[in-house]
Image (cartoon, rainbow, N blue to C red):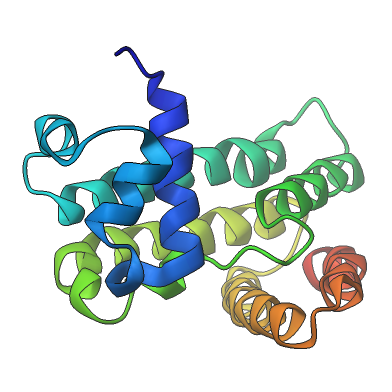
Amino acid sequence: MNIPKDHIMEGIVSTFRTYGYEGASLSKLSTVTGLGRSSLYHYFPDGKVDMARAAFIHLTTQFESQVLNPLTDTQLTPNERLDYCKQGLQHFYTEGYQPCLLNIFSMGQASEALRLPIREFTLKVKHRLAVFMTGIGLAESEAERRSEALLIELQGTLVLTRALNDSAVFQRFLDKLPTQLLG
């Protein structure tokens, strides 16, 4: 059976986002990917830890492509870059209903294996946001402060959107984004 890698990764990511690391059993991961347990171990020799690492890499690659890379496209105006960034956030988090794997993987058993990649990616996102802001004239210290505040607000927004089952919470966050980044 030849199952496309994208299908396997989307199934794994979806399962971790839905059940968390501890709740994503091998049985669930096997069902959603269409792979038997032995095939899962063939692709991911260290089992669920390898799957979590692969899911993390898969999602961080998507996040960079959809959210961060538009901020560096100097062919676009700052407002156009932000529009693409907002669209990327909306798609990546499914209008705020998808939890962030940084949050899911930063606790429990997954945090031991993924602590360093999570830290590095978080610092990368924070830095890329700050670089965008300094590129449009903000002082470096203010850009650093704003990028950290933005990440804090994004995480809280994702939790609140799901808790209230209201995508308007996420939309308000996106609507404020230009003011928060551009001043």
